[in-house]
Length: 232
Image: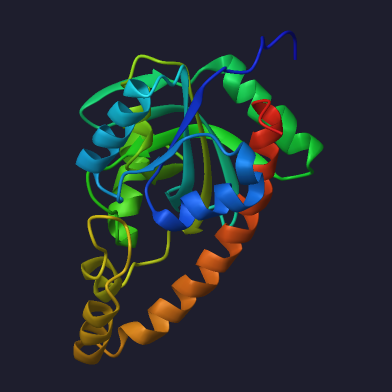
C-alpha cells in the first residue's frame, strides 16, 4: 500500500445526526476527536464544517449513516468514499492517504467495506425512484448531506459511512417530518404522523431494523477509524 504518511494532528468529524456522534464517542471515549452535528441538512453541514475548521482541524472525516443507491448494498454495509459528487458540480476526491488508512484499519478489524463515490443531496432522498435516478446520474454507491461540505473546506478529508436505507427502501414521511433541525426526532410529531398514516408503521419498523444493522457496523468502523487516525 505504500507510505500513507502520519495521521492528522487535529482531526475534525462531521456527522448528520446526534446518534452518529454518540456511536463515535462510545467507541473512542476520551480519545474522540471534535465532532459537530449538521442536523441532516446541507446548510447545517456547512456550518458544522466551518466550526471544525475555525477550531483548528487540519483534516476532516465525514462519518455516519447514508442512503444506499447501488442496489447491491444492504443495511450495515460500509463504504469508504473515494470522493463526493453532485449533479451540479464536479467530483471532489477524498484524500488518498486518509482513505488508505481507513481501508487498512477496516481490513485489520475484519470489517467488510466497499470503495466508491458518494453523492450529495440537499434533502433526504426518500423514494426508490429518486434513488434510482440519482444512481443513474452519478454512479455513486451512497448518498448523504455532509460529505460535500467536508470536501469544500479545502482540507484533506475522508468519508466513512454505513448504509441504513437500501436503494429499494422508501423512507416514511412521518419520520422525515418529525426530524428537528438539530437532528433529533420530535416524538409527538412522529406519533401524530403515524396516526394520520398508519400504513407507515410497518415501514418504520423495517427502518428500525435497518438502523440497528447500520449502528452495529458503524460501531465497529468507529473503533477502526480511531486506530487509523492515531486516536487510540
